[in-house]
Length: 328
Image: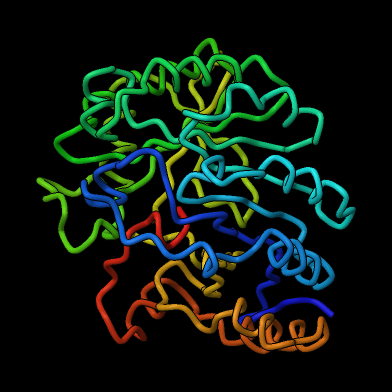
């Protein structure tokens, strides 16, 4: 049995939020006062997460990305990673983190054969970083970046391009790929900022970002990417690393989508833009067997919408959750 939707797309990639809590307060992700965090009993337990991943891996899911909130905020996260490493059906275990809490865990992550770390860093300037994140941890995060780049873990940098804030640093980030074997990825800003927590002066979409880069470099090479890649990737000749753009909001990557999401409270989402299909946590706590879980996943994925625009149109409410709540 494999997970396939009605468009024939094979679903092999799960994004699972470990927690809705975060130690930063990034402007595009959550309001300054934070979000109404849920009771701990309402979060999926590690045992429940392990079971969900095992069942999905038996249906062909072989890549898992663990997100938050900030996953390293949750106690015993590294022990959970160790338990996941025993699932031989998983080819990749990746983590998205803000980097403020992981420097002491890098060696352990290497031992556990974690594949890649996506480090969220939206500015290379200390004061601007503090303004975006509302926290003064830039030096810690940049030190983590340097340590990760020297480790055997693949390193991707996630930069949310924010109108009026960090667009003047796009070339600085591309230049990081000159001497460092990293993948710099620019992400279109999403609407999930809590009903207009931050006004956007102008839209920095894929075309605006790539045109700015092309204006600054004589040659830009295309980098081959899998059909299911979320980014369009490039490199500057003779640079060690690469850069890419994730069209998260303009959604030109939907046709080859192979992803599903589960939030920290167990809400199953076929698409980032849908309102959630069912709560797998409640299903498990009501006594569901593994076979019943499989059938539910199969039937739900079959109805995965064709793209994010269809998913958004089917919602009963505006898309306005915090990204911390959705899962990065």
